Image (cartoon, rainbow, N blue to C red; front, side, top):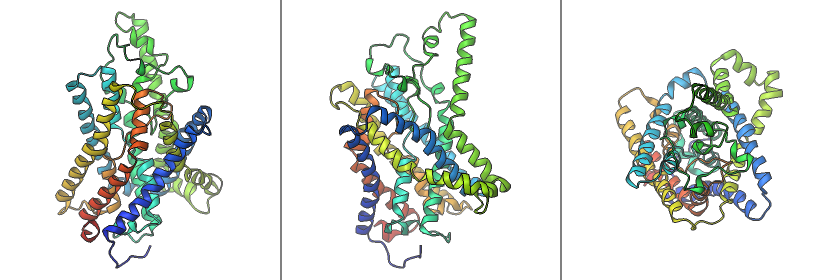
Length: 421
């Protein structure tokens, strides 16, 4: 992409951001309308979700991270995991204190904390990046790197996927930081596990965060832990270990870790990503082709999940935590994230922390605090369905407004004042 001397006006920014967000929201509505029209049947939805979680997303992680990462890049982007942890802690406190102040049950408090902490840092922001390429928004991301628009977008995608991989690993142990269940908290039937076998197996992936609702072989042990024998305790421990290993060895995490190993090992990288390598021709090239379907298929799956909501205003008690999560995810956390990134920019301006001067890195860093809650594509609980519908369908225009604010901030802190104002 050639650099343009013509500045981008605010009206052009509005038009370009509307076009980009319309591409993302449009794919979400495809899934939503598919369910409502009966084209997207429950069986097809489950197959679609499994393909996204176990095939498309691992292929994206492997092809993108393995092909663009190296040891120097990993060292250079060390602030990303720091931002991930920092934003998770802050949003976790928001969820925890709200539960205490409003005296919600422990089960509902878990929902609030998890839904507040884990946001969609992959499908929505990566979808927007891909849409940027064909718009004038790419002028904002011009940096000292001599890159085309596609290369710049690819770099931003890598930043977000690395952050996603780090968050996935953290999520593997997330349930151990949540409050213990109420001893006899069975009054809230909306939180009971769905009896469909597909909803009982919830792999922790990009979209899974409500792991406390899983009904598995460990559930009876957890409910009868008090007074249990040492034999039962050993079974419980073995079950937990097995559960943790199954999470860590999930396809997305395995694909991401394998990509990291290949990326930082020159010999392996030339074997898998060298244009003349046999492995590239017969394996990696096909993986890249499948990876191109990940973002649109994921956005359609999100819409399909939102389409499963039966009614929105049935239970007042259901709407209260949903409204709070939406406020945190669309308002409070973005403001906090922008303040933190701006502060880092101010602190690092005289330091050799040059990554903060990369507009695409700044976009990725702020995205870690923005966007709606990540979803579990297998979950059918009232709270989650209502939250998904509200965040991605009912309040879909907020994606556009969030993007306008985010890009204006990026333009401002990178010195492109004529774009931001």
